[in-house]
Image (cartoon, one colour):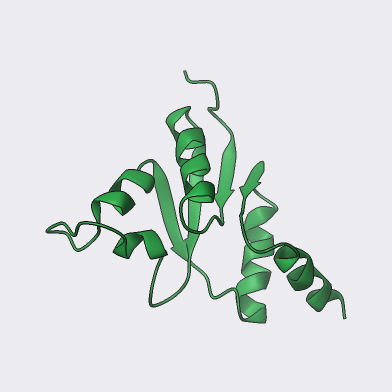
Length: 110
């Protein structure tokens, strides 16, 4: 048994700060679901030294203990799926520019 067993985390973090936070939560037993953009995946997949599997050492370190899904958050369908996923999570980790999530939320109400 670990401290965060039964806790579900939605990782929307970009670059280092957000993803690292979610990785630490995973180390303590949380289930972490990482959302990546289509085609390119998370930018950390390309940062640093490549490995034989095609991902970088940075990505392999930050992605440990995570389940990855792809969502196109620029589309309404992707944002709708994100809302459904978020409703089933206890914690959301994000480090978008200020106002990004609020903008998406208000776009669906109009």
